[in-house]
Image (cartoon, rainbow, N blue to C red; front, side, top):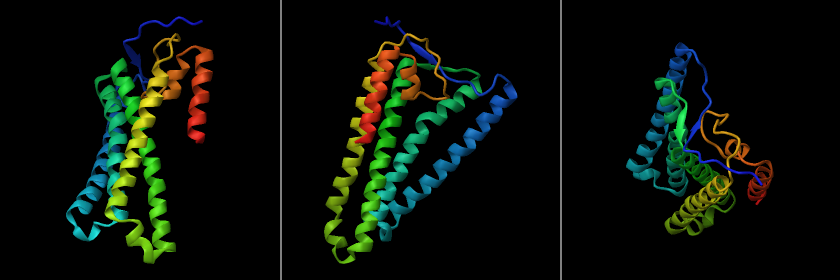
Length: 204
């Protein structure tokens, strides 16, 4: 058996020890983040304000833009702050929250992309039944199912990853927290067990 130690914070991977390069990384991340905010913000504003876009396709696109904003806001701001303040620390709670949100939002995005593919299939192959099959209630139900399944994935995978004893230090070999890096800090037997569970879950 492996014995875990109490960990209160993690060390994220630093891009560089040179102050100038850290500021360069901050600038690049800021540009990427602002572009994502602008692009997704324009999509959300257009869909909400234009009544001609109140259709199933744009309703799902609105949800996708919200999920994309959430996922990029989970990791990029922390990486920007670390580069700006020349630090690599993230709290245990912050790391677990980051993992939960990433799994939740990305899983919901995958589900929503599947729903959007189904929407286009109905629109192309069964155009006469489109209004019947994809009414407002059906669209809301499918979107809620995508968000709900993502939330469930996030809870299960985060709880599984942090239920393992972390015995190989607290250095995360990535600029944000993710499950594979947390599993590498656990016991080897536990790591293989948890990795197998992740693969099996994704295969479903």
